[in-house]
Length: 210
Image (cartoon, rainbow, N blue to C red):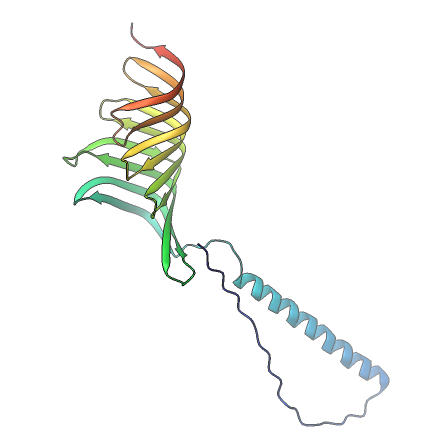
C-alpha cells in the first residue's frame, strides 16, 4: 500500500517598520505591478514543489546492476536469478511499517532452477521479470524460453513462477518442443524444473519422428 505524504507550507508574517514614501503615480503603478509578478512567480514555484513531493510515480529504494539473487528452501538452493538491472520497491501499511516489496528485473533475465542435489535441472531466460515478495510470485515476460536437462524447450511471452507450489504456468500461447514433437497450446503448467507438464487447450501438434 502506498502512503502518500502531503507537505503543507506555512508562511509567517513579520511586522515591518512603517516607512513613508513620496512617489509619482507612474512609479506607484510600476511597484505594484512588480510585486504582483513576484507573487505569481513564487506561487508557481511553490505549486511545482508540492506537485513533485506528492507525485504518485513509484520510485525504487534500491537499484542494482548485474545482480544475482539466490532462492533457498531449508538451506537448499532452489533457484538463482541474474539480471542486468534489479529495482527494489517498498510498500508500507497505514502505520508506516514495511508491508510488501517488489523486485523489478530488466535488461535481460536468466533463472537457473536446481534439484534436490543442487544441480541445474532447467534454465529460463526472458527480457524482464517482476517478483512480489509477500505472495512469493514472479511474473516472467518477454521472449520467455525454458530449457530442461533433457533438451525440451518451452517458448511463451509470459510465465508465472509460484515458489510456494514450486510451479511455472501460463494462461497464454505456449510452444513446447521435445525430441518427438512440437506442441502448440493455450495454457500450461509444470513443475519449476520443467519435467512434468500439462496443457489446458492443445491447438496443434507436429510429429518430428521419421
